[in-house]
Length: 480
Image 1 (cartoon, rainbow, N blue to C red):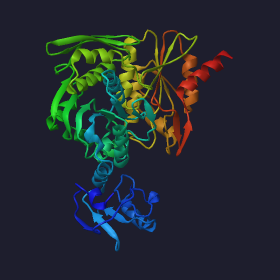
Image 2: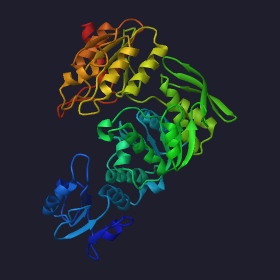
Image 3: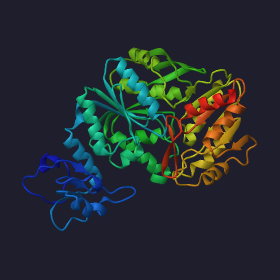
Image 4: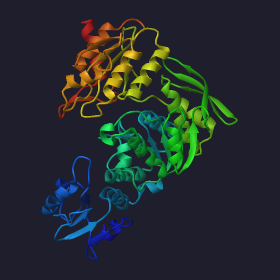
């Protein structure tokens, strides 16, 4: 692409460029630079791309896009923000794919994945071809693509959107993380609808304060036409106050709400009302949080112009999400095992309280906390576990480069004054086996924290760990 076409709509402070130059590719990792490429010196969270300008030049970069440290020779462009510029470069390179599809973004600490999957299912039942970008995977219709982070880096994101456009997607439903908003990964994208699920403690290792975290999420509502907000969350009034979009609320006192909620072990039943309209809804995903997730998905559908009755019918047919209150087969056993991604205080409390709503026996939870992440939430999660579970088994999640027992000690700080029972077993495989061995009739055993993940990060290495396989193996061991 011609360099001047590539730089269109980017604020340029200064530049040294030729009249004509064709750029074969844009790179922001110097290791990937090929001769003739444009290298973007991204100021990152961990490192600064300006350090790698000499390496990029040695590898043949034709143009350097930077905020500072312009090279002494060659072609260069200086901009106020290389991160924002990278997003615009991606949009220009791939032909602004988001402009030709209806973009729906969902942000919040918990519930993003469930809401996006519910909405994808609803839209597909109306005949739409839907792209999905999220924590578990990226999807183009039924085609599944792996993913490394909730929201890809801006240039890759534009490439994925271009694939979705080229394969005929009319809608894209995506999880939009606070990191993505703060780091301009979704800059240049105008969302048709943005939605806010909730705000609870997470990612404070990055944002430092809850107010910074909230402000990062609120950025979504400065780049969407319609916003859908969950009134059940205490942060919503401030989010509404700062939003510059049309605002629609769900929950008690909102534009759309639920009455006569009935929680069962395999579904949630409710009456949904919007003004003078109403209709029954049955969602085959157990748990009280399903009410908020369902209302948020319905709210988005309404802002997209889908009538309430067909929206309710479509939502009633939606399936659950892998790793979100997922029932694991336990043949021959009279207890139930659930896998859930709950890895924050709010997520853990939600799943435990929801299970207690319909559990006839004891609630047993196996959980840990991730290493190299927000350590403040660890004792809070320990306190929640012993408050709502009859037995808590504290183990490892993804310890990463931290000492696993040090993480567990942080968790135990919130549990030691409790009269409730807890067991410590650092090895997650062994912890699962302890829970299954202790399981009795009508008990609910929750394996919390890993959800859809099929690995565990020990040190800097990913090792295979699929909790579905572990349950099956443990039950086989018990019977032989």
